[in-house]
Amino acid sequence: MAEQTALPTADLIDLAAIDRAHAAANKEALLEHARMGRTVSEWRDGKVVTVTPAEIFARYGLDEFGREKTA
Image 1 (tube, rainbow, N blue to C red):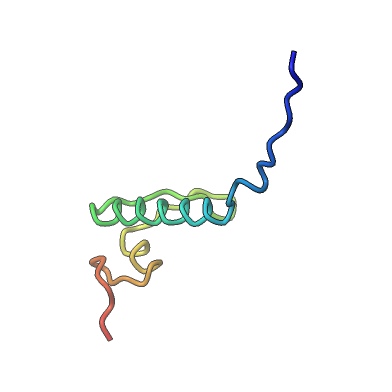
Image 2 (image 1 turned 180 degrees about the horizontal axis):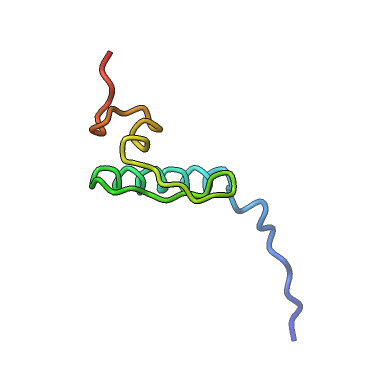
């Protein structure tokens, strides 16, 4: 049987790009729920907390309706 060699996976995987993609997907999912008026449950400080749509919008610098804040 031929000997298998390990691929240099550390050189092939861009972990920063994976983190950015995950953060973008998470943001979009949260905003989608908020736009539909749904709350989201999160784990925070050892407890499950409910996050309101207004809190989600505020997290991303949007007004209570999900629009960019005007000056």
